[in-house]
Image 1 (cartoon, rainbow, N blue to C red):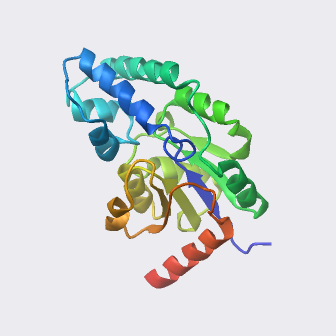
Image 2: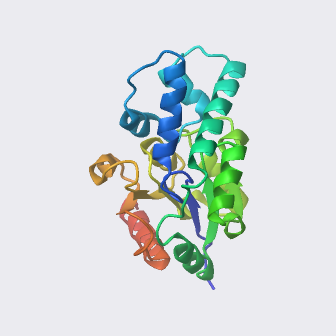
Length: 231
């Protein structure tokens, strides 16, 4: 038996599935309809991926947008996203085996995503992964989205694991920052950013392309090493 409980908390989009390009394209189509032309998809991915829809709209379209209008536009964008990606959502290579190994090792599993309720249910359903997680926290369940730490802290609370014993899996820079602000170590995935982008973060203990060669027990060992180095 483990003396301590450990948890892996996964961002969803860009981590459980490589789908961030679909989100980017849906935002671009929405913004184009509202007069914002020429937005580079990579700029969305680097600067705002993982944020709440309201925060994306305030960042790119209108910093003073009201809550009701932001709700309406976010729902429009999410509808576009679901329609255009329905046959394209696939699990990240090695995902299910990695989750199975982690569960067998006694590691608790959670999701901490910037997506709302509909998108979260949609993606986890397509991935056939809902039953694998003991806690799922979305942007609609916390006061502040990433890069604030609220989502990850709430997931850790539901899992009953101290933040310092959690490893977050993230692809987006606001998400890695949120993990750092939550006091959590992070494994970065290269679906949205290249490896160099994560060098500014001292909480990143590993960088992976997917889950095919990832070892849950080895990652817990790295967590111990990083905590020991801090002490």
